[in-house]
Image (cartoon, rainbow over all chains, first blue to last red; front, top):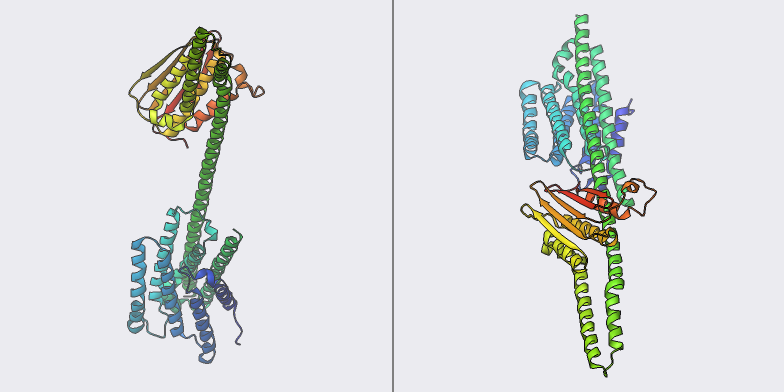
Length: 219
Length: 269
């Protein structure tokens, strides 16, 4: 009844790895990653255990975790993006987004439904920030291997996760009404796979940090 | 209704897959681009290292050549003159004033000549000498020295407005010229040496011509006679280092001409 899912194991692995490589994360914008992953695990578990007695998912926890997630990813992008214009846009997002979620909850979708409007907006913004980051990577003259860059993996995970979930988030209300049965299961399955992919990318990113430490010790 | 909802689901899934494919395409493009970029940087670095290695090799060769020249000059020329001077001093007879005066005069001349030759040698070896004097004047001085050694008629022709080129290139051109003059003195058996400096806006052409016995250039194209063309190959390599062209032409009994063409305002590699 209270067994952990595959996603939970991936989240836990990512969390443990982030704690293990924390000394290497300390000097980078990825510093709060263990804290964020710890928070995600706690909300996931809380959602799991409250869902059983309530027989339905607690949307408040979902709203909280997704909003914190967007703000956290934006914070990381702000740390890695170089162009002042991009940085300003990310800062603006970090300020405006929680306000928009508040408006959505209070005036539009309420506390019982998924905040799909602001979730879609957040997803579009995340995709845009990923593109900005990749654009800067393209122009970056630094000679370093991309596959050893943790932020490349984190951005790739974020990009795929939000690209994959964008279409059904945009049509969430419509799909909930007309294609809730088999369609709902299919989207849940897609979403689960995207989450696995996201956390796999995080795990690879932390492994990169670990191997970086090894190579610096060897040299 | 059931059919419609299925169509909607299929459409949303198709859009999702398309978006994911687009994302994969973007990430792959970025990855491949950066990989190619890194490879390009690696190749550039390799070229730079290889250029530096060549430069170091050429510098070592120049140094070796210089040591050989010093040794030869001291042994064959200055050493001989000082030995003669010593011989004069040790065979002086105070009872024969006329002969004594003649020997003192000879000794003074020999010591003076030795001092002069030492000074020329010192000037010729000093790398700042070329930079301070400028290429044209430094070559002029070298020609003067060759002329004074006797038996040669020399001429320096300068065409166009003289402009400075970078010190490294000037020094390498000067060393090639020195090497050519050495070869002429050693092997050419000539009467006349002409150096032509043609300053054009886009290039500097230096040609060193003699009217000596000339030689057959054919063996130079065969690697098995390595020692024969070593000096010429060294000159060729040095010219290549500064991005200059090197050409040698020779006709038996008519003479030899070495031409160095230096493009101006274009650094090698």
